[in-house]
Image (cartoon, rainbow, N blue to C red; front, side, top):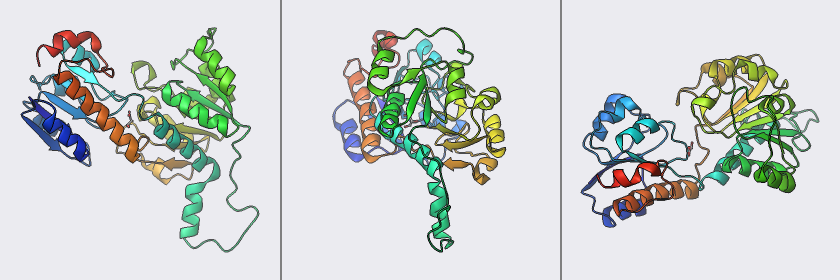
Length: 342
Ligand code: DGY
């Protein structure tokens, strides 16, 4: 059994891979920038299992050249970099890391919101540049967030963690759950979860269109899928209030980047972004705009959370090698047939 680990793995987990299963070799490929298709194909050659991260392109084109591969253990909750349909067709197991990064990611989303509303990055630069000469009552005035409306797109675990933070800060919360373009005007049937959120956080489920129109701030928390690619385009941005703060810690491609650049450049919205369509490329207008706060995909980047994510991935690998079904398998329907080939 040959395992490839893309990216750094904490040493206690390296140790577990060495000792807890019959693994012939574990190859570590660290990389600061995404590997090219040629590099990743070469690294995967002859490997049975890969531990991957969001920047690793595991498209059909790559996977089909890795005939030995039987499992992808993705160290992230999102797995849009992996062609799931191909994995299902070819008997490749795919696991991810749900549940352990909700608080860290919601913390970052909320921080981005506060940074944008209170101009914290600008203030830091101002002080460092030696521009501060004393208290002024109108210096770097920001926007109050309490009492304003936060719209959350995608109310899964991370979206709900964001809603809890918003409640604590006195925001009004509205949300839409199934993030589909044009899910607009159809009648919404509230279920148990909606009633629970209404009761505990005063959160109100609305259509996507109403969310776009009513929110002072919008935070995106939906996974990237076919239906959510370019979910926020020019039309959606136009519906937003002038000066709306758009926070994205989900995936860059949920927003049509060209339209986003235009909206930011025109001052229609403020964008607080942790993710981009073609990471690590950030469009220069976003870099140069006073209407952006930018972070390098660090939503889950705390010591504790990144360790927990790596641990979940290693657990899934070890479990599969021992013939067990990990709870965090994305395609459990192919488990029986796939596990026999390992
Ligand atoms: C995820 O888990 O999908 C994040 O983007 C990386 O932590």
